[in-house]
Each structure stands twice: as C-alpha cells, then as structure tokens.
Amino acid sequence: MSVPLVPEPVENGSRCQNVEMAKAKIQDAEGEPAVRGALAGGADRNTTAMAVRYLLQLLAERAPGNTVEVRVPPFGAVQCIPGPRHTRGTPPNVVEMDAATWLGLATGGLTWREAMAGGAVHASGQRADLEGLLPLRVGGLS
Image (cartoon, rainbow, N blue to C red; front, top):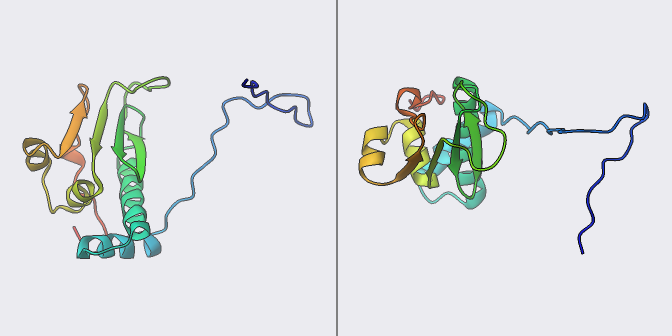
C-alpha cells in the first residue's frame, strides 16, 4: 500500500509546491580535466560521468531553454534550446546517445551529421537538432 506524500507546512503555514533543487555547478577546474581524461581513453566511470555532466552543463548554458531534452544515459540529461516549455510526460523533442558519442560531438571529434548518419544519435521531434550548437568550447580542446 502506498501512502501519498503530503508536503509539511512551513513556518508561515504555506505548503511547498513544485520545488526544484538546484544542481551543483561543475566548475571548469573539475570539468575540463575530466573531459581530457575521458577523451584520452581508459577513464574510470566517475571521470566519464563528470565529463558527460560537465559538457551537458555547458550545452545548457550555451542554449538555455526547455524545448529539447538531451540524454546521455546513465550519466545525465539536460533540457535546452529556447522555445515552448515541456512540463509533463515524454518531451516531444529528445536527443539521446551514449557517452562516447556525446564526448565526440561536444568536443568536435565527431560531427552531428556523422553521428546521425551512423545511427549513433537518436533524435525525435522537430527541434531535436544540435548541429548549430556543437562543438562546445572546452579549455583548449575545441
């Protein structure tokens, strides 16, 4: 039997609604070495995860918005690109790929067209196109 979650009242008697916790920003001093390590090959899971999340963060900073969801399972996902906001269910514009593909696209080792032609990226929706946003600028890499 499941119990519905009810927000606890706060001091002024109001209830919390739709509270999003801010994710900690990955600083360049941590993210850039992780990207270099992941690109060098043989990186451990934590380094790869940090590199993927850092590059997703840079994409969201470059193209803030909520129209397209970029997924790199199991490491992270971000919403980006200005336009209509998506709030419930599966987003209408989704881009999904593995970590190696994301690292290549984000740093310029792979083009959007190459990744799409090779089937390395799964993109659905009218706005699910990152071609004009990649590669990202990463300390001395691209």
